[in-house]
Image (tube, rainbow, N blue to C red):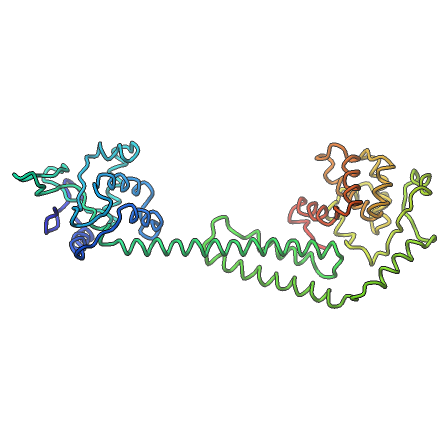
Length: 401
């Protein structure tokens, strides 16, 4: 049973117009209105950011709801609960008394409960001669009933925002994955274009994504990634359209080059003895390289320290790699086999990458043999290995050429 007028708080707690308004609203309950107490509690937990209530205050509210005897909050079942602070503390997982009082005040200020204080501040129910309850002092749960629709809408709004945020993050993930793999494929396949510039733009967008971003921030990032994704697609489509569909002419040229006995080979002296047993692959023309020499040197700068007169061409890189393999402990036979299976230019790139990560590789020779076997089975591509080296060297050296 509730009084028909507003009661002021006990002790030093002040009375405010907001409390007067909450008291008045709590009396405007439609006839027959009811709401399931744990359902409205779930709505509050979901929409707490909109309602403005904290986690600890909700824990106290959960404790208060356990003192309500029915599952349905309704005027017919009564709207008051009157536990002591000691009892409520136990239901709130042993919350300290000062913390309990502070969170009860928060529930009142948020308009989730209303105080009905007795003259001495105690909470109790007074019964009449017939044993029925005539007057109750404690906390009224009427706001949970009168504002139930408001709490439901708040929960729905938060769910909608969370879903939109999730979908936006998924779009960012898809764009990041697609752009990165398309750029790697473009470099690996030797597609002409300023892929270094594309990569720098991609990283500049990705690096600005905050760990905790709102929907409006993510929408701007998605727009930038979408624009960049479209540009990458157009560059690849343009290259595909301009490529000779037959592809036979370039393939025949490479086959003729393989059979040309005047082709230039790059081997270290130790390989000359076994050249009759292994058919080496010729060093391709610079224009046919899948990777710019500058890109390899940016990914693996340490190999330049071993070059006698610097590295200005693929021939310089292959000569330096043949020398470096000895420093790494790679046997002549392992390197010769890698050159035969991968091609001398790819084997040189692999040696440069192994040198760059030498401190993380226990056996360079064994590692090279594993990569050679993968290449023989068609399971190895040097592109991802080169890209990993580029990323490991930090943003200052990423894909500038």
